[in-house]
Length: 460
Image (tube, rainbow, N blue to C red; front, side):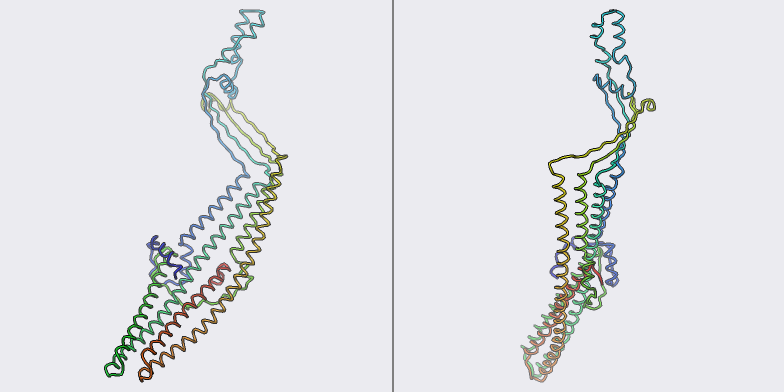
């Protein structure tokens, strides 16, 4: 119960939802509500969606990209202006100063040296010109050394990992709901037993008062009875408070207010799955195996450095001194391809491949270690459950004996063969057995839930 208090405070602060479940809620109904309304499960679902989008992002690299580029410039720089005209297919001989050249030829016939030294003003000092260029450019990778496909594999493995993490969250939350229901059953059962004891104490109190009136008992006997009655009332109050805390916690898990739940047996049935079933269904092992797939893909990514990178592109453009002016006359296209192949980089590629290979081997070892660790946990839990089963069987017998002894001493007190102190002692032993039985049953249930968690919640 102490482990729950911290989460309960968070639940009270968050105030769950305003929706109230007023009818008696069964465990199966609670689990269905949990799957659809629990906030942590919703967050895990969003993580899965995000991972799926990452797969699409990685896969989209196969198809390249198509860009529309719109450039605008204004310049009177000689090189820019001539380049603008040339790009828009509007360059002419006069841009090279042919008008000045012809004028010089007419004025200075035969003087070739002077003609060659003429500086064309139109070329060197052009008027400022606007430049609008509209371009569609498509680039596509043809071969990347399997790099893109390896990244897609990695993202798919990460999506699988997120799905497993979501299952783990669901598994954990179902575990918490189930444990809360069985804790409630134990509290109700123990409260019922204590109320029975409280009824017996009321009977003993009335009997003691009658015996005091006829001189067969003393006032101190009545005080002992009333002190024990107060102790039992305090225990009942604690258990009722714990039930209220459990309702707050269940409301937090289901993200809506729960005021009443239906509980059956306080004892959880022993699961029937084998150790092999646990190992095949365990989420930690599945996650470790998925991590191994990621590492294998990382080795492939590292090896891609050994291959050439081949890409192609195609672009269509039009340019003018106005936006889309004479677009059809000024259109142009360019197509091409490029191969890049690294020949030497100081052994970095081989070092990266070796590093990825070592990480793959390390992860493979960790998977085997996880399997052995889970197998050890299963063996430990099964042993603990058997021990608790034996303790519960013994405590049930001891409680039955304590009930009989108390009834016997109560009768002996009526006949003045035992003191009130003896009766109170036997009653204290009776209460102690009830509390010990509850604690042991709770520990056994917790261990069974832990075993089911290792098997991914099978046999819920």
